[in-house]
Length: 236
Length: 361
Image 1 (cartoon, rainbow over the protein chains, first blue to last red):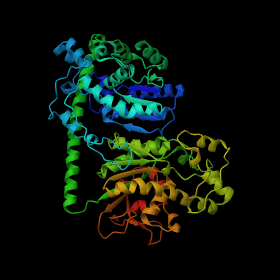
Image 2: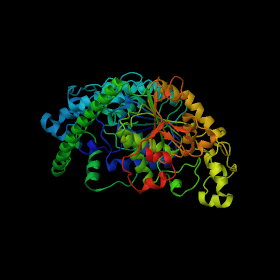
Image 3: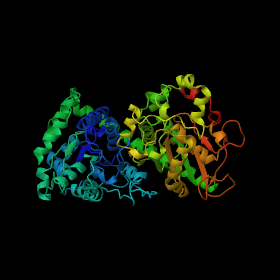
Image 4: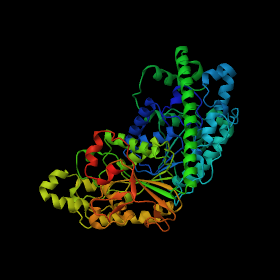
């Protein structure tokens, strides 16, 4: 079984701003949503063998709330920067509504949902971007024994990502971590972000690039578990 | 495929959602595509904009503060390195925050009780103490028990390092309390006598009586998914705990220290006793006096060379001695307790009473 879940409502979800790699926290409502999801998972009864999440606080916090609420605090949790949200470039921090006023609602929708539409790149000197670039979590962390020791080389912080870039890195996680675990018969829980999850859904459902814009769910709801029961060929 | 997804999603979604303004916006947000931007009400958007501007300022201020903190740390590190005072590696041992059965004064062992409200505050405070000491953690190791995992996560969150992998090991579990599991400590003393109970609690080779395999508590532990049933004991003495921790120490923690990392170990009372005995080279009679209060970090610093006492890691020595455990002069304590300068609140007084080392800091 593969369960995908988006983090609970974050501070910048509430403020309707592009977040990308900025490390905002959950709101009180986001915490409640995560707890409700935990109850749903507990009721569902599936025992998870592996939890994959991103390096961002809102997803990590949601995973911890999910595990603790489902009564399974000791499940191994891997925090992978490749499951981070799509980097929003210079749109990071901008309010979506005021952007629509500036650039037109069509352009904003192209940025948000387009397949290969890059956001305007953010300058590395911008305070939000330099804080991210300098963050310790994206440095190489060689760890004594165990694949869960963090990135094996420096994670290159992008200046902006298209959905396709996000898809590429999520595919890597899929093929080197999720797929082997699923083939092993393990139940995997992935806690991640809007666009990263759209990419994963595209992978699992086997949607082609051309159909992606029209078929992929445009909005993944917060903290609602999407459970895939996969057969031996990893088909839903 | 999309419809299947929606059906599954709806089946699992909770019927109760918080209502009001945010609920309305969330409902609007679920409609696909352009509806998101057009359906918000003007008043909400302005308030949200103002809130958003405030938050951008906060984010920028935080980024600036983080930059300053980082450069302050680099400065201290550079200065310390220049004076050759920076230790090669650091090890922080912390006990989890107050748990439900700490409060109820019951032997816990392998039962998976949770933290109390105070325990949560204590764990956050421990995180603040670590931050105040300028520590940047490289590795986190904890047990398979909720009270320790939760404490570790709370500490990391306060340190703003919640992205660090938290490694969970059975070897760091608490000593299995056998038949004493769940018993109130005072009534045990009445049943078996104070000396016998203290011997069970503190001595190396005195295991408590075995718990029956068919008792509810033991069955719950043995059938728990997180444990391989073959490795669940029915009781443990401190030397058994020491042996299982030694395996983890040699294989994982010691190599990390040799590489110069800062390792945080969040674990339980008796496990810490075994670890400290190993680190400080204590004789069994001195182990009796080792008692770490909940959520009080004990920082060990190691030098790669120098005049300090030999540490149980090849090639490392303790940086300095900070006191003694108990009364005997030979029972050196090489770790430094991180405590706030002013005792924070009444919660600490009861804990510090019987641990001589703590007040000296």
